[in-house]
Amino acid sequence: MKKPKQELSKRLRTFFRIEDNPIEWVKDTKGYYRCKFQVLPIGGDEY
Image (cartoon, rainbow, N blue to C red):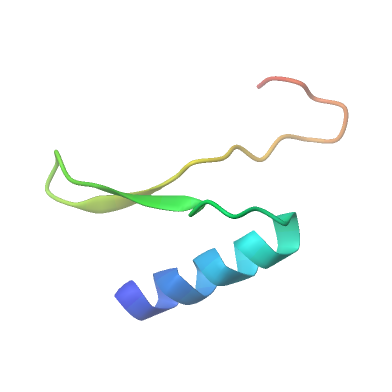
C-alpha cells in the first residue's frame, strides 16, 4: 500500500501544484491514510 500511496501523492502534488504531502498517515488509530483536502463541486464553498 505504501508505494501506490507515494505515487498518488506525487501526482496530486503535481496536479494541484502543492508542496505539502496531500495524504497523511494517522498514527493514533490502527493505522490508515487520510486525505488532507476536500473535493467540492464547482461553485460549492462547503459541503
